[in-house]
Length: 78
Image (tube, rainbow, N blue to C red; front, side, top):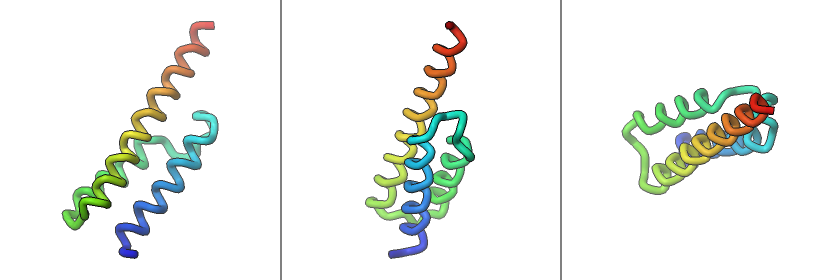
């Protein structure tokens, strides 16, 4: 396993752990993880499999953020 694969695995674990928590309980925001994933993409040494994994994580972050915003909006409207 390469260093890049290890980094992707770490970020995957961290993101999925954060998604399982309440949005307010998350230690690091989605933007932090997104920035780390973009840095991996910028390395220029990403295989197709790694690119797919990073893309899937970015989509998860998008979904997580959208759901967090929806929850905050519904709380504000009650």
